[in-house]
Image 1 (cartoon, rainbow, N blue to C red):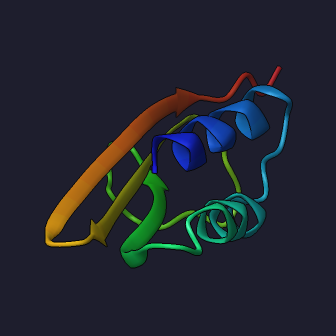
Image 2 (image 1 turned 30 degrees about the vertical axis):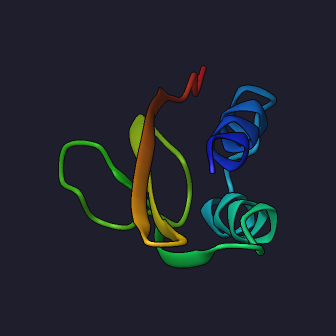
Length: 80
C-alpha cells in the first residue's frame, strides 16, 4: 500500500493533476489487496476533486489479511 501512495506522490511531483488518473493508478498498484477506499480530496474541505489544485489529501484504506491498513499523503500543487 505504501508503494501505491508513494507512486501517487511521484505522479503529483511530476506534474500529474488529473485526479482520476492518480486514483486509477493507486487502485491498479493495489490490485492484490481488498481496497476499502482510495480518495483524492481537497485537504481543507475533504471533498473529492477532479483536478489537483492547491492542497489535496490522498487517503487510502485496505484490508490485508485480517488487518485494516490506512495511509495518506498531503500534497500542495505548484500551480504557478
